[in-house]
Amino acid sequence: MHLPSELRAFIRASLVDRVQGRREKSPTQVRRRRIVVTITLLLGAAGLGAALDVAPGEPLFYVASLGVAAIWTIGAFASGPLSRGRSWTREGEPGGRAVVQGLILGGSLLAVFLLGAMVVGQVDFLRGPVDDLLEHAHFGNIAIVAAVTAISGIGEELFFRGAVFAAMPRRWEIIGSALIYTLSTVLSGVPLLSFAALCLGLLTGAQRRVTGGVLGPIVSHLTWSLGMLFLLPSALSIGDLLW
Image 1 (cartoon, rainbow, N blue to C red):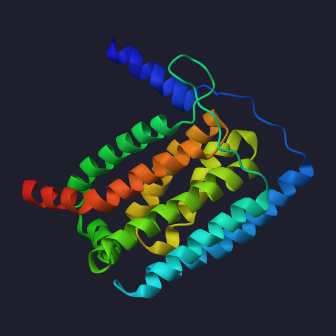
Image 2: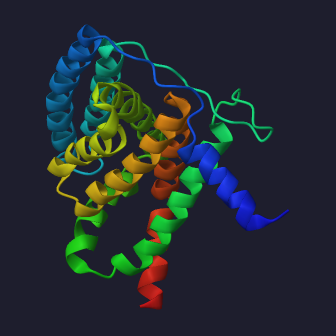
Image 3: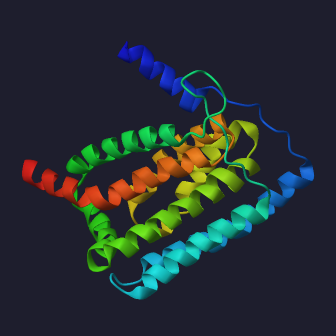
C-alpha cells in the first residue's frame, strides 16, 4: 500500500468529489429555509450565551444546553427536508454512509487540536475562558455532560450543515455556513471555541458538499467534540509540564 496515494485518494473521496449532483431548489424553498434559519439563529445564539452563563455544576446548565440543541433541531427540520447523504466506498461506488470517513476526519481534527492545546494553553488570555468552559465538565456528572455534548453536536450539524448549508448560495455553501456557525458561538466569550467552530465548520461543510447529507458531518462532529471533552484536560496538563 502506497500511503501518500492512499491519503490523496481518501481526501478526494471524503472532501472533494461529490457523490451526487446538487439538487436544484425552488425560490419558495430557498426563501422558507432562509426565514426559518434566521429566526432559529437568533434564538439559538441567545440560548447558547445564556447556557454558558450558568454556574458550573448547576443542573440548569444541562437543561439550557438541551434547550439550545432542541432549537437547532426543530429549526433544521422546520426549514425543509434533510438527507443522510451518501459517500464513496473503497470500491469507488456511491453507496457508503460516510461513517468511517467521519471517524477518520473527526479524529484527525481532534489530534491537531490536542497538539495545539499543549501550546496555546500556555497563553493566559486564551487559557482562562477554556478553563471556565471545562469547569462544567469537572463539576458535573461526566456521563451527563457527554450525553449533552453528543445531543448538542447532532443538533448543530442538523441545523448548520443541514438547514443553513441548504439555504446558502452555491458558492458560499461551505464558507458561509462555517462563518455563521462561528458567529453563533461568539456570545460564549471563548475565542478558542469560535476558532474551533470555524475549523470544524469548514471540515464538515466539505463533507456535506461531497455526501449531500448530514450523517458524515454528525460523525465527525461527535468524534471531535467527545474526544475534546475527555482528552483536552490531559492535553493541557501535558502542555503545562512541557512548557
